[in-house]
Length: 411
Ligand code: GLV
Ligand code: MN
Ligand code: MN
Ligand code: MN
Image (tube, rainbow, N blue to C red):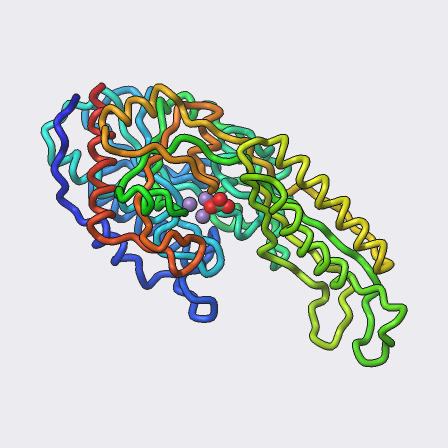
């Protein structure tokens, strides 16, 4: 095994460089939707940081940024790739995404300072719209690259302001006709290792700083759209209303009831859009966003079917109608056994943990061997300003990543 490169750059120091970008005073934490001013500033920061390290930067036709380190001038094939994302959920933490990107930069510093003879090129990648906070479809960049989402579907996605993804992409220098499966890029990549803040309590419980990922729960998002009769809150008597908010509220309670009845399931409503959304208006429509996860994809499907049946009953009871639309479904992922095993050899003390959170590494797994490293989060909380990583754990993560990459690029 290759000698462990010594760490030269502090991961928390890199994160401090971007700490002011995209703070959200209303929600707390960070709101960094894809192609917002904040996310664009983070991309600039990343490319400037990569340039400082003499990496060669390319933004591909799906908006994924690649920063290549290929000191031996090898052909771009069988490359080792690491990286993550810089977009966030609304009011998210500082680490979900940026920790993987900052750790990749710190790892490059360690690799460049070490006396290595890479036999494989290395790339740092930053994926757009991982959270799906803007267009409702998580891991949009990687799903476009693999063809899991068609260019037609992606182009037609509309954000809350009515901007299509095609228009947004064009405004940001992409050709909307060029998005989609990227065989050339995929043929260059040999494996992908994503480092990420842990989003649960696994490492706290084990008293360890770093884990290796085993699997991702099957997970998806659906929209339940309840429609009724919009009307005046003051002039419409309580009897005879067709208020979709009531059907939505009853259905949200059933999401919990039905989710609790299934061992290992997670069922969440975290977003609800009343239309038109006025405090003195009976809504004409309420969109309820449902997130369902389980290790067995068939259980996810069955639970969504049951929730939809309950929603139909609640809609009928209120004189309303409801439709169910799938926004995305990511099947369960088991990371590549060979690559995972290699990571375990390199990091023999790291426990193996599953996760309930989705990642670009899960999408890419369909095409190339992928693996993940998780870094302890002492709050166990994520998708919240309370997400946290202690500085020494962040550095331990950067060091673990550098060690893994040193091995893979000289393997
Ligand atoms: C993304 O982080 C997700 O798991 O929803
Ligand atoms: Mn993430
Ligand atoms: Mn996330
Ligand atoms: Mn994620």
